[in-house]
Length: 309
Image (cartoon, rainbow, N blue to C red; front, side):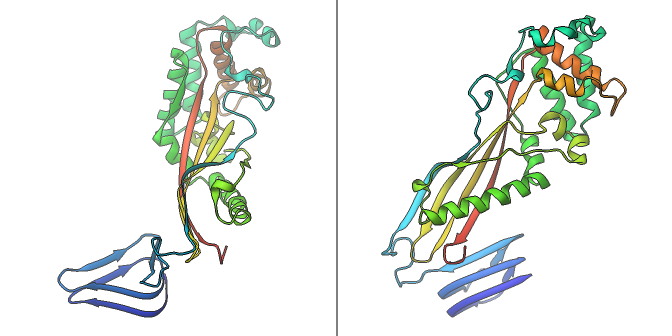
């Protein structure tokens, strides 16, 4: 636990109970007055509690003579390719369906190709079940079902959002992007509306745990991403800024021929895993299944001080 208080005057007055529970507490002000004379006053936080008092010296948002920058929403980051398309703007191969591509003609000679659609669908479900657990198995089977029905469109899942929220790969990814964002904010006097679009890399879920728990088979590497800053505010007097950073990740639930070249002979985690991948491909490119976009979101609270960033 850490409690830091910096002020010329801090006056806390209660008639009965005053409780302040948090791991990190930071109070910065010329004057802080917290007073409860009849009822209890309780301040609690699992993570971080910040109390800032601006008093009557003109440093609050309304009284800051230097001004306050506010941006309700702004696109600040984006991958070099869009959902469904390659870097050069052409349609991604894994988003085609019922196209019988010449590059994969050899699969017509594979025994799996002769299986009927229900059997191929069962193979796909078995692949999803063998590489996912718990709630993520439910997600994987929902995705398989949407694919087999030919629904297309965009798939979203709160379970999937929660799964990526605290994933080590995302935490590392966010730290790297946040460092880039702070650099750009500083270059642009902490005004996001003056910023250009930051080029973003792609998030990859490739750990052993990702591979066995579900993110590996349902997403693996995201295809595209964008980042937006929401409800941003920068007080030029106090130098404090805050807002919310919203990531939107996109992936394709579909296969291209390279996926079969890589995984068509797999024997792990099950002996017929390679055949399960072939079933997925055949359903998409030679039968009636349809790929779709998977959309995932993650929002992170932002705060900082331009004098300390």
